[in-house]
Amino acid sequence: MRPLIAPSLLSADFGRLAEEIADLEALGVDWLHCDIMDGVFVPNLSFGLPVVEAIRRASRLPLDVHLMIVQPERYVEAFAAAGADVLTFHWEATVHPDRLVQRIQALGKKAGIALNPATPVEVLRDILPQLDLVCVMSVNPGFGGQRFIPYVAGKVLRLAELRAQLGATARIEGDGGVDPETASRVPQADVLVAGSSLVRASDRRAALEALRRSREIHT
Ligand code: DX5
Ligand code: ZN
Image: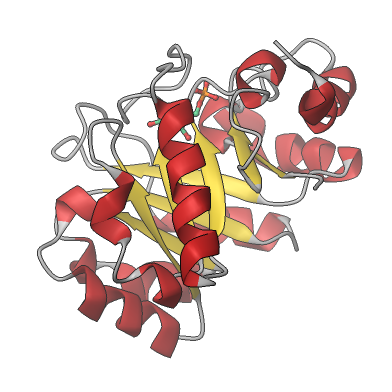
């Protein structure tokens, strides 16, 4: 199946964010991926609520908000109000993931859980049927431009098998070091997040086409 393509705005030129969004939207990308970093859960800071509000004003595309923050339960209402459509928090960042999924869905938003590379997908066995999305990180979160970690391909396959076994419908999202070659290693991913390989590409149209065609690449 054709993957949804979600450019990571972390790789965009923030001085011309509205133009960058218009350009990506004109190319026909599916979602906009917003990376929120707090300098605590990950060793980097990115952007917060006012920027998500500005992105919301600049686009009608679904906003896929990836919270790389501790205690995400403190902020889901604010990010929902800022315009998020999908709200994804990290499994490793809260002790009450079930409660948080319920709260996000009660806000009328799609709920996702992200897993760091070293977190096995099997932790989601019981909650998977409740989820709208699972973000499988193929780099250690915190920075764009890192290399895809090879063993994550096996996790994506195991997650797809678990989903089929449970009859669950959560989308599987691949995030980190995704380019046409690495995307071909995670053929079960329904959503591909791409920063460097798409947003930083000299020819974004060609990069988008290559990502969409990645399913046809066999390595
Ligand atoms: C990493 C972020 C990713 C990142 C992807 O912490 O969650 O979304 O921006 O960027 P690339 O595609 O450059 O790895
Ligand atoms: Zn991300």
